[in-house]
Length: 546
Ligand SMILES: Cc1ncc(C[n+]2csc(CCOP(=O)(O)OP(=O)(O)O)c2C)c(N)n1
Image 1 (cartoon, rainbow, N blue to C red):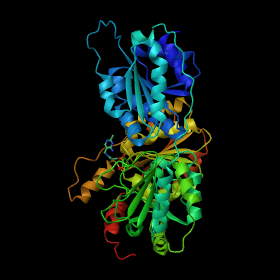
Image 2 (image 1 turned 180 degrees about the vertical axis):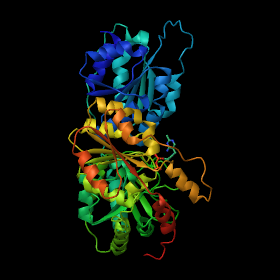
Image 3 (image 1 turned 90 degrees about the horizontal axis):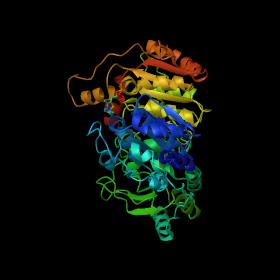
Image 4 (image 1 turned 90 degrees about the vertical axis):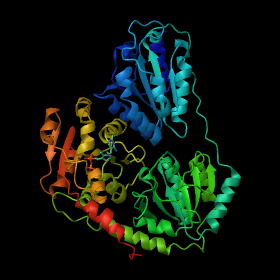
């Protein structure tokens, strides 16, 4: 069998359904093999977007998302997506082409050392030098990308190797069971939880996996323990639960941090240090139990006293079976914090001034999204508002990047979400800055006939940085820009463009767009004054509230 056919067969063997990307001439044998395969090629307009889409496919399915590029300039465009997947724990395989390695007549034209470039951004990066090693390399790459903690892998297939005749076969795949946590670690955790007076549960990104939601919900209901989450742990347990305290969108100083400050034990399920810290540990402060697939990596603000390592769902189930509500636990303070959080989050939901304010935007978006509808956020100041104020009801219904925190991923990840879940409503929510970083994918979305809404929050500036600039007492400089006419921009791609001209139009426009076919781009002007008023002034002077 030809090596490129063997490569594609090996991917089929792994259950790969899609390959996102842009081929170059070095991939033409691979492309020809793909033509005959049941794997679907999703051609994009930029490799970075293909990488974000593959990573989101991996994030949502737990199975490796695959993307393809040519050598040199194609694969350098994967760099940000690789970092995004690697930090955010999303299984992704990048395949890139290369000039012939045995005999080349092209000097160093387009050649950079891709393997070395990828090394710090991946769990595994390998050049194929013999066609017969393809099954082993693909299996190893998939195993590593999907194994906890998931991440990025890269394989380079040179042009001449792609044409070699091979005599090997794809491996048979056996899925290993994840190890149970150690019984002594569980015993120790149970006694720490029993001895605590005000234990609190934190749910982080790593808990956003199958099976864990139910186990955590059961733990909360059995013990009555209150919980909060990180931005990437949103929705693992329904945030309408009466014991939910809020999302730590900021690292300190929010209303929720009163509760964290009073807790004497935090049971941290699935958070690791790649996310912006949800709270800062202090010497002599609350103890932390780290429940994860791996031990905690330590830093100055995170140094747990106990690791419970193993399959997270099994760990949580084991803790639940040894615990119940205890009389000496006192959650009355947490209940008061919860009331404050709820009050402040909903305080301005009805304030319909125009341009709209973030609180109103979040509340109206929640109204139109079904329980299992997915919002995919880009990076900008609105991300804090959505993390803080938008209640997620189900796992993976708020896709945001609190790890690399890159701009440009919101729209491609919404496209991938729609491909994975065609029956669900999906909305990308982007700043005008972040949207324009991958807006060329409008063509891809229209070509794929995706039913998708893209909400663009227009403030004609890199607002998040402007907000910080003001906060630091600097003068306005270097952050304002112009924008295209977004309605015409959408129409130029064959999509539908809408402009929100008053606050009360917002819900109707979003609702209509979500319920009619095609790609809809909705532009809404946003008032940034609440960023300063709430996130700086109000939070700085709230000390007397509790
Ligand atoms: C690729 C990338 N470049 C730069 C940044 C730094 N950055 C973070 S938010 C932001 C501004 C985002 O502007 P916009 O998308 O318009 O959203 P807004 O904050 O205005 O709501 C910038 C430049 C980043 N996170 N990622």
